[in-house]
Length: 242
Ligand code: SF4
Picture 1: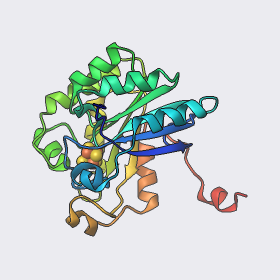
Picture 2: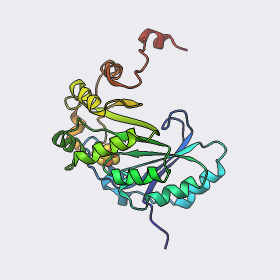
Picture 3: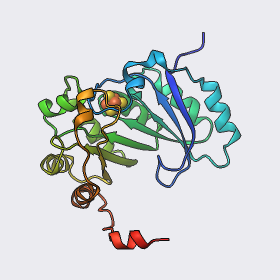
């Protein structure tokens, strides 16, 4: 019987997902969290509504384009909840491509296992909230063991891999004070990025009523907290560009 790797989505080519790389993106269904701000409801709670993508199809795409695809991002949902993730990554790796893992950090044991086998080259970990159980659980939509999240952070910081921690700034919930605490808890990290909350198709319908940050406010938060610090953008230069 063919093994189910829970592949429910595939983007053959992306120039944006992995900075500096041309990559394919594989989406795995299922997640350990139920973040109210999540935009991937189909992958998280309505997996049955999605068509299965075959691993064979993914592999044949990689084979045909191996001269110009640098890597594959494996994302979700939350990929690390699947016991057969190492096997999936070994199979993808055999195509001679790099692998980036997107994770919410809830399964440090799996992250450790993947790293010790050398199955990932880069990791993007979402940091939802300041590191208290109450705040984190609220934004993850489930009771979170904050010790597990912090262990993932420590494993990744010590890994020497290309690692980015990223937080979604949400008006009234994750603003400057929360971002400051997150940055303090993370300590020195190679890369920390902030993305702005979008109030469309959120898992919790109540979050669709939360306004989005004005671009200027988001830019200020990025200047204050991102690592490395983004270049300050002069709006007049942008307006006259091109
Ligand atoms: S946003 Fe939350 S619920 Fe959605 S896929 Fe990511 S970790 Fe899972």
